[in-house]
Length: 333
Image (cartoon, rainbow, N blue to C red; front, side, top):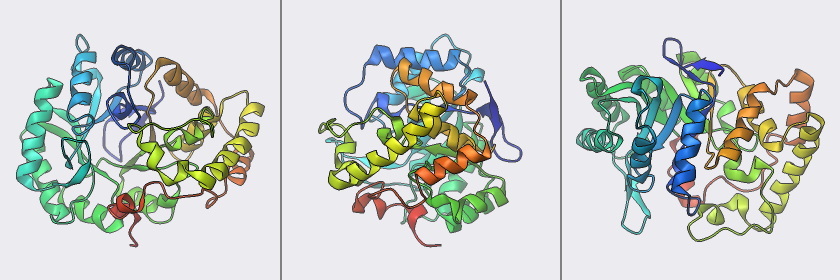
């Protein structure tokens, strides 16, 4: 397995991480046995980074990871956990809580569900606009001092918030959406984290399936699959976005690769400080994603890929208007 370092002085983790969210939530029903088998296959392939959140299935994802990791050495796995998202019993999101007391309470429950004494990296899922980021990061920093957390991360925040957080405690990574269809971080956020020595963990590298090469217009989302409510998967937007995928498929065929492999390899090519998170729920999809590690694209090939999917070619925002408004990362610097 290729390894990459988190920031200037952070630990080394696998160049691909496994995002476990879809095994519990958001993409419709998942197969528990296949989910656990996929986690095992990822670990056996050398993936060390497992990414979860305490609100994925309201604790279900952490309990699933606990079960999957039975018999494995804790030190061989880097577990990253997001916290702070508030949900009602019907699953809807009702806000974020970054207060210091909430940070510590959420961590206590996470440690119990995961059956571990420490979390490798702990990060607020979003910025709580009612709580200074200094207070939230300061509370996690206290948990670092106490030995319950090893590293601190951020998720979907902008330049000002990144700098303010870094001034309180070293930040190991920023987790944020980054793909051929979502490149807004390149203008200001990516240069800032590189200046500060912060890594990027990129989620949505396949744009939630749009860039997988397996999505079709005939595929309809269910009520449990939140993609059915996303602008990029709707109407004329979907037509435009699938046309971009077909342009990428032509290049992938020439490379004897799949669309997904080319899309992941492009993200890998953006720098040694970028670690794509693969949201595979099945072993077959995991195996396909792992093939991106052996796909080395030269400058001409990268240029052709970017010409096929120009910077602003995607149709539709990545979330609905309400969710976009909550993203500190999308606000002007």
